[in-house]
Image (spheres, rainbow, N blue to C red):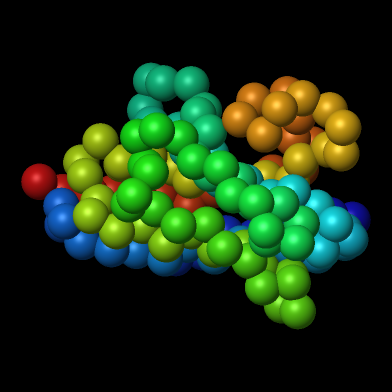
Length: 125
């Protein structure tokens, strides 16, 4: 079965950096658009970044453009999220997700059919 396992979360001071990883198994990784979403307490899950199967196309929420970078290593079936210049408002649980081909848009929850368990990111001021 499909498994997505996130790692790399933690506690960091404002202005610091973290790199999240998501290891995938049970799917054709290199043909899968992958994304990161986050969910802060009391808020809805929201799009952060997405990357096409080849890695040639990337998409970002306006709130993270210029600070976060999504990348992937298809040989390792892993997608990454490099987060720099972190802000307290980035505090959330971060989820890795795999998009269904041809369904929904890259920024909408509807289009994603597999999710990881999430990893907590806490940014202190």
